[in-house]
Image (cartoon, rainbow, N blue to C red; front, side, top):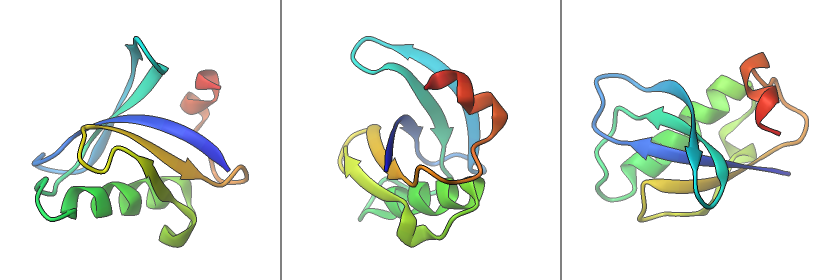
Length: 91
């Protein structure tokens, strides 16, 4: 499994990846806008579903590792998945 660090913004008009940004602890984090409210875990569920769709894997293969109540999250994703070419430079 591979860890990916995210900075999530809930309540967006539509879910989208905004790109990479510098982070003091994690180096680089992927900025993600999610079209779900941050209440009752809905945004967390949407983050997992959205990243699974982008990576071309099932939702059961993506899991939230850290940050269930924070905008900064760490997800576990399979080593073998359809990584967008732009993400390769983050390894």
